[in-house]
Picture 1: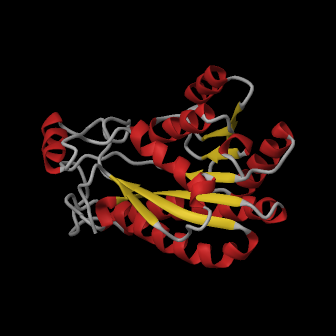
Picture 2 (picture 1 turned 120 degrees about the vertical axis):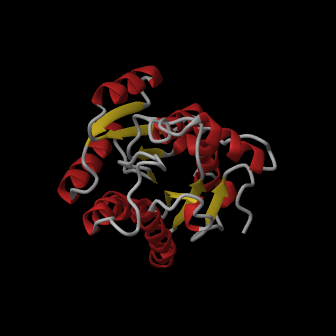
Length: 252
């Protein structure tokens, strides 16, 4: 299925990487659902910017009933099931100086990240898979991180949750593949700049840029464009994979 024929749900789609993904898919002609939990003003403004091919719908992705209602509302709005999901929802601030240390981090901090990152993805996959299976086409694109390959800053809670999401990506690919549904991940590093990375000092951005072959820090727009590959016909034989999009910083 061409991207222009797809109906794409982007969780956490009002800001940062999510908003960049919404704009990338809309640019290619897709219809997009901008999911938001607390950023209603930004979500509605983005939908208005795109026009009739976008709708902003509120739901907490950790709440399965809310996700079911979101998916039903999206199908009612566009008259067809969701074909593509970008699991991007996140509630985190990257601040190395303020992060919890291994000696004092509480399980509640890890549980909070697992709830948003893993439970959220599980809820959206389960809610959309029946519609995808009925059409024998589906694309699930999970947003990961290069930190579980190169943990230069030990964000224990965030990194553990994203590593679990990679495992879910690969196991889900095995179960859903027979129904024509692919499940993949794109993993970035520090992005310049999102709300989550706003607390990062300029010196850190410059240091990362100097370590990459491209001598630059990846932007949200560059990162979001990689999601188009996994949604496109060009990736129809690719599933269960993790593509690192960080300017070449991590190469294994």
